[in-house]
Length: 557
Image (tube, rainbow, N blue to C red; front, side, top):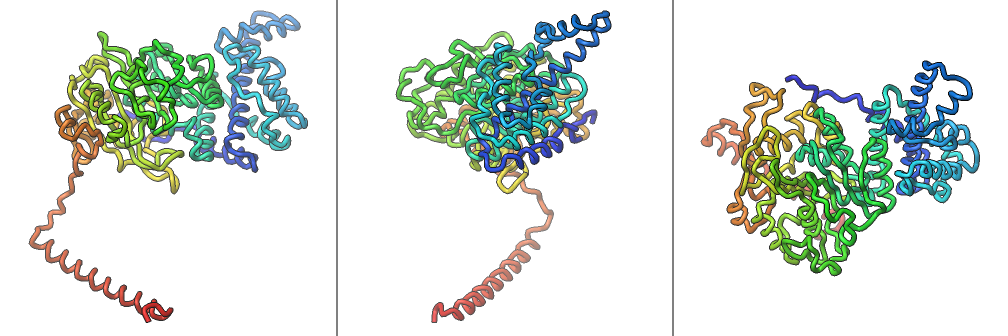
């Protein structure tokens, strides 16, 4: 196959892990939730400073080639427009990394970092109030702050500006994941595992249009969406990013993350609660990707009794799941000549079957409106925050196939169910990962035999998308959808109705086919009976031994 999907990318996982281990040693007794902002803020300062110095060096070459030197050269090198015109942040002298590193041994280094960040915000209005400016308050020992600055200084952002950006962006994302793991349950407020995000992005394929995440955390959905566009040779300027986040510190993390990936986004003028204050009330999105908080009970539902978003029924005040689902539907673009809006989001498994507070009736109406495109049951232990299994919902305004490039299959009145609960491998004792989840999105890096590949290609085949150019039918089989017992099943609305509008994939996909071992039943049955008798005999021996041991300590005497 003409693909490079099975080779490990030279990205930076080993390099980033070494950095993480060194940085974590410097943390000492500082809580991970506090330390996160210290480290990630410094990484951001290092990035914008390196980008600035890279542009400055190039500008210096251009000016010297024009015969400019001396005081005039120095003056022009400090001309702000020469940087902002190239989408490079202007970094004032006091905030440049070289200056901070030279002052790192000073006992007031934390105050100097706060002043540097203030100067960056002052001179870059689009960063105003979006960076952490509380280093002095966090009480990190000066010697540890110096160690952290020296450590981050070792990160060499070499090559082109884009390569440097990608390197630090990847390190930043890796650190987000590690902090989420260190924080445990609280980490879910800002981070969705990369492998889960990749499934959503690969399924929705956001080539162009408006991308929206109303609970965007640190912005991972947006980063992978842009990476998907780049991997397919598209123009990232063809997508517009809209988001919202209620947590102020997480909102700042998102702005730093997106800025390092040079992603322009509208996250609203300040953090805000999506239900009580929708910052994009008129937005009709082409793509919605989200991981809303699960089963939230205090979402202020009693204040929103007659909200326009509750088209399919008022969500129960004690659970926000169907408030989120209807919020997504409300913001989906209506069908047009090339299809309608599509949404992919994470939900607790209870959303598939619950009838509490009228949720079952809301779900029935959504199914009958033919909005449910696909449901994927995911394995347990994919999240740092919870070990419970979750599911992915995919909704669409138009199942005609018009929103698929080169045309797709008409799937009106049908829903695809995928049971992926057996996929994935345990990375640690408590964390499972899906294979091929660490790479950036793109067909060329998605082996069809990987965990994510199995899910994504089943969905694309079902939708009638054309086969990738590298697909080899002799090696991989015919590019055509088929129901696979135990894994995937295409069901009609009538079939879903027979199951009481419960959307649990296991109800539809059935049991996995078992391989025939070719042993005749007449031979197998006597052999199994003999084995069973041997187990019974062994069980009797164990019971006898246990009773003897108990009698020695006076039990049963």
